Image (cartoon, rainbow, N blue to C red; front, side, top):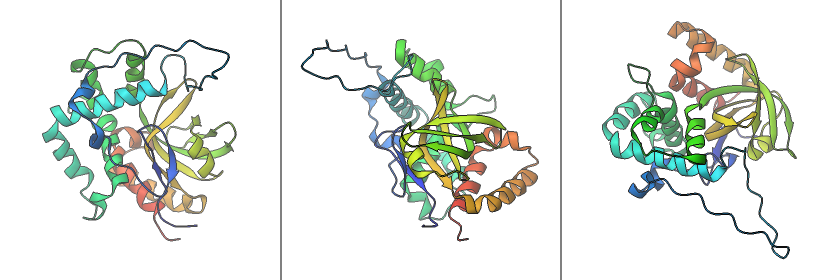
Length: 262
């Protein structure tokens, strides 16, 4: 098995799975028109002759709503916060090599941190600013935006995988709580004992990984624990603070350990 960090490739942010290849950051596909909320498409009438395609839904919003809203959010950041993106990017990539700065999966990881992890002096994130000053969304798109406001960075120790149900169960090792993930590619790639770092949003009673996910193989978990303990000591932080106050540091530590040759 390769020692290269396992990353997720997604046709759209929030979908896809864990693979070696990577995607472009969400900003690459946004347009000014993306700031205008789209009206949900009217459902077609069912007929006995034409079977209906299944649409993944959690009741309050569907996958398409989430994808459209996140596209609006990325476009909002690129249009309104260009200087901030440059400043945050310099900090995020401070320890990266020139080659790493160009890797699409790391650009995607940066955008996830920018939108959901970075906070100003008052604790306001980009997704919070979008909620306050962006387009006034309604219905399912508003529900999707509320889910994005609940996005969190989570390091999950995999305990059980059900490929058929596209379900991964485990424990958030930093928050010390049980977690159920719904993602077909994560279910296909992960094994019990692995750890998976990803941004996640509420998805019914489960969590849906979004952006780029990093898998640490079970044989590297001991090295990861030592690295996390060292980072927490250097930052004078408890483990619970790492995914909230030090999300960028946490990402890079996990990314480095995932790429170690052991």
